[in-house]
Length: 185
Picture (cartoon, rainbow, N blue to C red):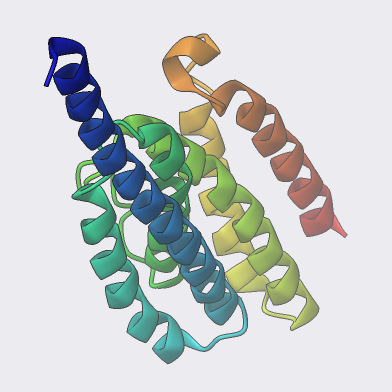
């Protein structure tokens, strides 16, 4: 076997292994995102038991994905962002402290993006509370929206450093402004 043949065999084996890991990351990413969406829905409809049962399953999938996502962080970041969103939203619903990125064992970029997305979910919770005539709950959700807004808006860095945060900051600002007007009605 020539040196060229050996080099091609090595490269083929490396690419085959990498392709297999990529497929695992893609599959896990989709499943985690779906499960997080279900868990968020459960919170909004008040099925806290179903949410609590789903969270450990999400944790297992995240742990498995972390074992294979080396070189595919650009794919897995979406799932981590969704995990942040459900974990933070769940903590807020339970009136617990907001977990930081080290608590959730994720990089700060998906944590920041997830926090920004929580603002939209809190607006939905606020609207549901107002519709059900639960003004105190609506005020709590609005307070948390403002807390997230105030903290996210101090980060003024380029997208190369903070990812999609800059765009999300604009969305957060809009969500808070709309919620403020809804609270005043």
